[in-house]
Image (tube, rainbow, N blue to C red; front, side, top):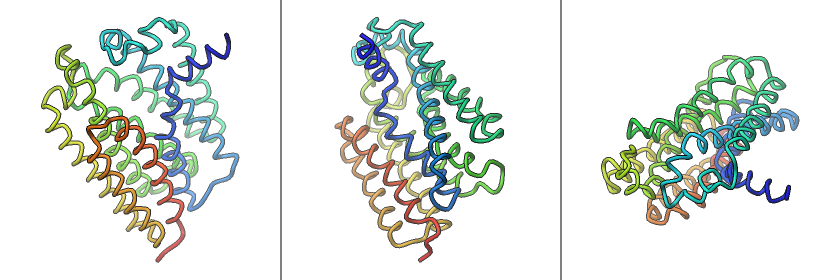
Amino acid sequence: MVVHRLAHYSRFIKVEHTLFSIPLLFSGAVLAAGGWPSGRLLAWILVAGTGARTAAFAANRMIDRHIDRLNPRTATRELPAGIMSLVEACGVGAAGIAFYLIAAWKIAPICLYLSPIPLAIFVVYPYLKRFTALAHFGIGLAVAMAPLGGWMAVVKGWRPLASGLWLGLFTFFWVSGFDIIYATLDETFDRERGLYSLPACYGKRKALAASSLLHAAAFGSLIILYIGWLRSGAALVTLFAVGALLYLEHLQAQDVDTSFFKINAILGFGVLGIIVLGVGRPL
C-alpha cells in the first residue's frame, strides 16, 4: 500500500522532469565556482532544487485540477481522477516547501531571504493561461530560477552576476520555447475553453515559429556566455551539439514526446557539459 502511494506521489510531481532542472541547478553552481563546488554544497543544492520543483508541480496540479478534469489528455492525472486527495496534494507540496526552505537555510542566510521569490512565481504562473497567451513565459521564468539559485548558493552575495544572468536568460528562452511546443497538444481544448496559449490564440504554425525564435535567442545567449566566460575547444564542440539539439527539437515538433521530453532531457545535460568543460580553460 505504501509503495503504491509513493508511486502515485512520484507520478503526481513528475519526478522524471528533474532531468530538465537539475542540470541547470548544477550549471549555475559550477559556473559561479569556476569548477565543481564541494559535495556538501551540491547535496544541499540538490535538496533545495528537488524541494522547489516538488512544490511547483504540486501547486500547478492543484490550481489546474478543474481544468485537467475536463481535458481528455489530463483527466487521468492523480487529482482529477481521484487517485489522490487535495489534502494529500497539499501535503506533498508542503513537504517540498519544507525541504526547499531547510536547504536554503543550510546554504546561506541570503538564500533563505530570497527563497519566497521562486515560490511566488510557482503560484502565479499557472494562472497566467487564464488571462494571456504569454503564459509560456511564466514557466520559463520559473525554471530560470534554477541556474540563478545554483549561482547564488555558491556566491552567497551580489557580486557581478553577468554570467549567471546569461545562463538564466538561456533557460528562460529555452523553457518558454519548448512549453509552446508542449502546448500544441492542447490547442483545440484551450481554444474551446477560452484558455490562452500561443497555439490556441494564433494557431500551431505561428506558435511554432515563435518557439523557434525563442530557441534562437536561447542559443544566442549561450554563445554570449561562451565568448565571455567559457572559451575552450571542448566547450565549443558541446555548444554546437546543443545548437543541433535545439534545431532537431523543431524538426521533431510534430512528435511532442520526442521533441519535448527526450531531446530536452539530453539538452539540459549538454548545457551542463558546456559549463563544466569551459570554466577555467581558455583557448
